[in-house]
Length: 116
Length: 115
Image (cartoon, rainbow over all chains, first blue to last red):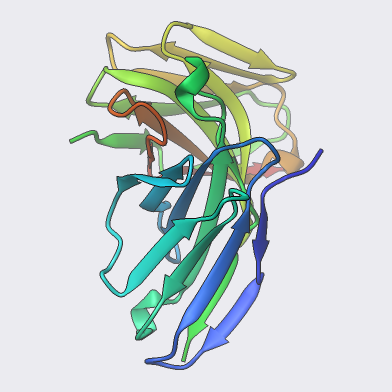
């Protein structure tokens, strides 16, 4: 079965550079979530999209932006990178509640971002 | 603000013992609760999803219960195996928006099953 695909799997950037992370949800899933997980920490919610519109927003820095495209894939853009941005970035997808039933969220394998 | 707590933070058991992992939450107006498994440096694998109207879900050796009134969920893993060694996280979705509600994670329980 198709899963959530994230690219790239690993990324090394220098401080003040820009990074773009991509997420391809499970086919027919219309909801995408982004999470950041630092070493030894639980995942922290950044932002979510439902049907290409921003749905919920968490502790996402102003330097970060994201969007969901017409094909439902999503991109997380990170600018002016700082050392503290080094983390695992996860994308998850689910089928929204338009049908009245919220489905499981499935996570991708993550992108490991290292800022040097 | 919803707070999700998992105790203990770490657990070590000999192979064959049953595992009992606890998750507690402060806001009972949840929509659903998911249990995940995470291996070091890897993604999160969904194990079980319990809707707010359900009391438990079972999958193979795994059984998860939900008691909204007491703000608790428990994940039972029967007859543990060394391959069960991982971090287990619970995550809740609150009934706030029509869709795209975030999952709020607990801190996880790191499990080691010794051969």
